[in-house]
Length: 208
Image: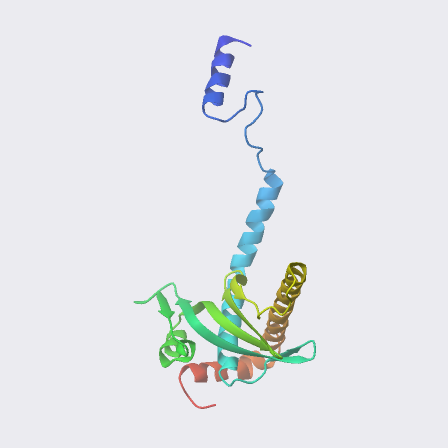
């Protein structure tokens, strides 16, 4: 190895780019894997409007307090609670955060939706039979940001872990059932003809 090459290697070592064995200090991620990751992110971002529509549909449908779906033979009711965040890309107000027990159903939130703000995240209370879950959903990726499971009944540590895993699976199934119901409605013929006009009338505060 020439002096220049040796100097370059020493400089790379000093920067932490290579280890004492001359190998890269950090394994570079495969370029194809990076591209797949970028493509997935773009796809999800491109579909973010569905997440916003889903949360808006849940807010609208849940106000009546009626069951929205059945999961494993038990009805599921939804209630939006706590903090609700709306965001937009233009206008005088580009973000609105509503707090309070019934804040998601307030005139302020409905009027903000009518004026173009979109639901970015919401805290939901899901009642499934006798079990009650709470979960915060993010619209962009439909990620669960936080969740509160029903109180555990088991006393033994191993049993409590198994019960927690089962309840987590139940929560995932309930969310999937709600999403599938929304997609069924969204893809149906009534969406543009009936559902959207009813949703807009609700935003305006007109009686259904």
